[in-house]
Image (cartoon, rainbow, N blue to C red; front, side, top):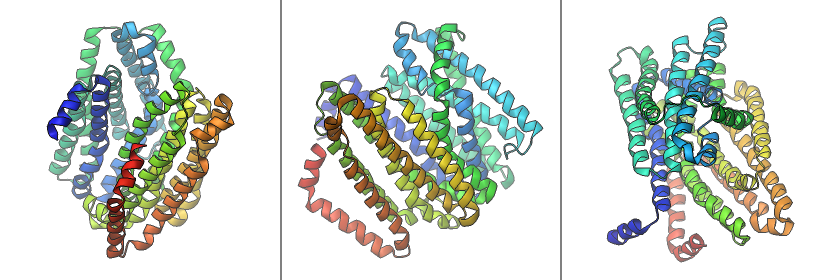
Length: 482
């Protein structure tokens, strides 16, 4: 069997091999935070871990402005538009990002020096944020080019070095610092220094190939492409990160740490979600291009049902996963995991349906939906966190991701009707089936909160589900082949 798989791999085209290894890289990058969590939660107090959590959230927020998300959109488009001059384009993108990062850093640091409570963090950590942003974006730009050119071997090696090595160094640094009040600082400084060391090597290599950090044409293209999308990217960051910042401010760092641990565990399901979406995008686009719309709605619904089933299973064993990931003091956060895991399902629904909006170039709807969801999340957090504590943030988040998924359901149907007609749209999107699956999954996950004290019942449900899958394996295999 191994020989057959090896032979099939060798005979696969480079695009297939690249897709496989890019998925592996994604699992390494996404999984490292989950795998390292048990070390950090035991080496640091919950208050110190909460500081790291808030720090990482602010890094994400400031990154939207300091990086213009060049690696997310403008870079890939530039690889196509300026395909004959990629070395110079890569050099200029590093130059543009570096300048923007310095300008934003200067503005934020000056503002925080004048208004100390603007960002509830020490000024040295605020400065460190922008070194971290520099490291992250330089690495992201490099990775974007490797993916575009199918250089999966180099990407795999660098992913391992950047993710694993930096994390190992951070664990060692936190372990050897005797003063508990300095462990958060040790963690973020080590991550920033290690990341900057890797980023410096990338910059030297890129600029050695073509020393053109400023190319006016490329800067104007990237700037005009990226700036209009800032509201969209900022909205997504707010939706995913603002809850931890608000919890730390309203409740405390320890509560933010408890919430962040449960949130990170729940979001581990997004690794599977991202892989599913990556696999369906080419298939969706190719079917639309050929005018063959049969099976689109069925495949979408099947994938949502598959992800929902895994989500329910993970939700059922959440107390045990949380016990492995963190000390017993974090167990109160288990109530956060059902809504967080359901948020992943809603995210997948919005991703898989927004693919149609991307195909038909209806990007304006994407920003509108993101801003609505982000605004609603902030309002709900302001109202309910002071009343119900940090758990309210999880339920606000799932409601807003549900709102985002619903908005994209409506927008995608509208866009598809406009481009291919109502009859064909029904072949592409079965909204009734999608939302029936989503509602059933949400009720099942939220009901798991009632079962957490009864481990035997939860295990019996999982065993029964597995038995059904084994007995009906032929039916399941037939579904997976469709």
